[in-house]
Image 1 (cartoon, protein in one colour):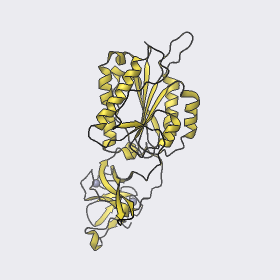
Image 2 (cartoon, helix red, strand yellow):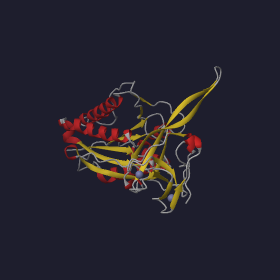
Image 3 (tube, rainbow, N blue to C red):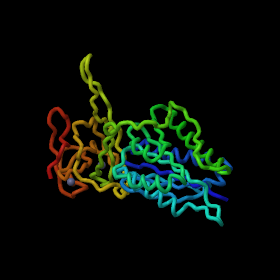
Image 4 (cartoon, rainbow, N blue to C red):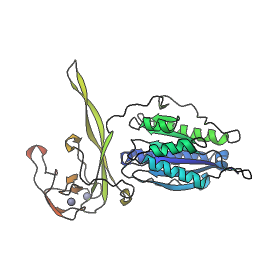
Amino acid sequence: MRRLPVFFVLDCSESMVGEALSKMEDGLQSIMRTLRTDPHALETVHVSVIAFAGIAKKIAPLIEVASFYPPKLPLGSGTSLGAALETLMAEIDTSVIKTTPDLKGDWRPIVYLFTDGRPTDNPIPAIERWKARYASQATLIAVGLGKDADFTTLKKLTDHTIVFEDTKEGNFKKFVAWVTASLLVQSKSTGERQQHAQLPVFDEQVMRIVKEPQPVADEACVTLVGRCQKTRRPYIIRYGRRLRSVGTRDFSVDVASYHLDGCHPLDEDYFAWSDQRAADLKVNTSSLVGSPGCPHCGNFTAFAVCGCGKLLCVNGPGKVVCPWCEESVSFGPAPEEAGGFDVGRGRG
Ligand SMILES: [Zn+2]
Ligand SMILES: [Zn+2]
């Protein structure tokens, strides 16, 4: 039986932390559930998953639908799209069976690339290699999750560039249903000459084809990583951008500030999936609104800054040992208006 290889290439960068990442996991589960009920898909479809953040790695090898178990998605800092494409091309080279005069190989592979941000590596060499050697033998559908995806780069990669915005209850379900439908269409058209992707129509309220690349706005979110001072385990704080109009009746500008979305425990493998980056805090903390408690030990704030530049959790003024640099650091009482204590920068 000739196989239909399907690759999911998933952005697991830190902006996906929380709901977006668990939705992607649920979406994958839901797609697989439907495929398992389709005799055609059960016979032909084989699925593989590649995740990318600061690095890219295959996290599920190409396997038949019946035996596929959706992997837990990692999280890391960075969006290495170039590395993701290199990993994809290497996987296609090693896992997809080519047609030769004596052998009917696999059907034309389908790739779903999901990303929500801008590449942090240089993806151009990989895109050029894809266009030159792979684009004619595989169908690639790039889905930008939200407005902040880099559509200019995605359009260079493929004409099938779609934007999906999860702005309304029920949209994600429709989106997953569309991905599933597009897969089923491909698996049924394998009998005919499967040269061009036939994508099912979709609800324009939910997603649309990107025709013109759009300008890229400010960062949609800010994420900061800290460690629990008691358990030493890492966590990630996510702030989302909100725009506020400031001005008079005749003139106004939108001012961005970042509001607390949540604070999530992290796995230690976050660091292995991340770009090496400068240790010091680079954001202007005055544009951040809200301070979370520690998700590991319940300490009052996860937003205390050690003299070494890293974040830790603390419960009040006093001396603690920084879980990053092992130095003893003390936090003093706060200036009046902050009410509480000064977590801005402790002294070592
Ligand atoms: Zn803690
Ligand atoms: Zn420190």
